[in-house]
Length: 155
Image (cartoon, rainbow, N blue to C red; front, top):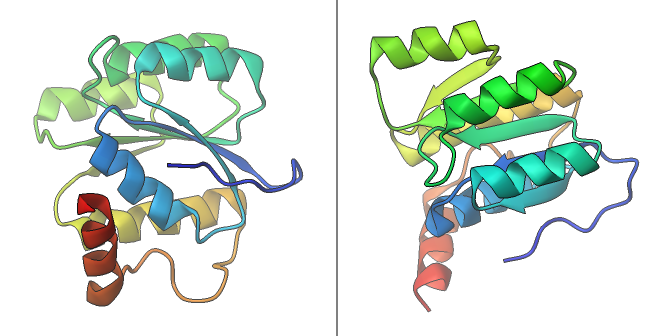
C-alpha cells in the first residue's frame, strides 16, 4: 500500500488504523482527493508522525492495539488543537461518544455499512480541508469499484 505522493502544498491527512483492510479501504477512498496521505498502523506510530510533521486532519481508529484512540486523542489535544480529528469506531456505547467529545474529537463516525461511513468521511474531509472531489465522487464508492477493490485485496 502506498500513500499519496503529492506536493507539500496539498493538505496532509494522517490515517491511524491498525486493521490493514480498513487502512487500504480508507487510503483508496481518500486518494480521490487532492491530499497527501500519511498512514500509521498503531497509535504510537501515529503519535510520532504528529510530533514531526505538519498534519491538517487526523482520521483515528478507536480500537488500536498499543494506545487506544481516546488516549491518543487526549495526547494530541494536549499537544495541539489546530487540526480536526475524525474518530472511527465500530462501538456504539454512549460513554465512548461522551468521552470522545470531552477529549476534543471533532467528528465521531461509526464504521457501519462501508458506503455510509465512507460517504460521511469524504464529506468531512472535503468540508474541513476546503477540497473538491477530483472527478468522480470519491465518497461514494460504487459497487463495481468496491468489488474491484475487494478482489485486488484478495489477490
